Amino acid sequence: MKKNIGFSDKVVRLLIAATLIGLYIADVVTGVWAVVALAGAGIMIATSLMNFCPLYAFFGIGTKRRKKMS
Image (cartoon, rainbow, N blue to C red; front, side):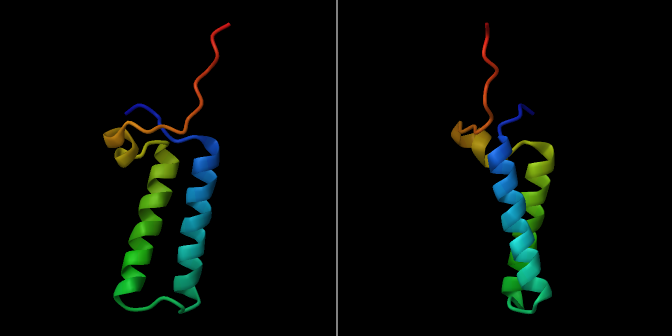
């Protein structure tokens, strides 16, 4: 798996995941939407930790900066 997630993308994903988890804990999101929110948060955390997003790979997108060759 080639890394395709940059630092800023990783931070945004983790912040969104933390927000979704916080909404669940505060009982703002309940029922089916709570399950969807927690699943989304889990996916965002997993892709952030692996530095790889399968959807990015499928569409040929990458937010990781390439090293400059001197």
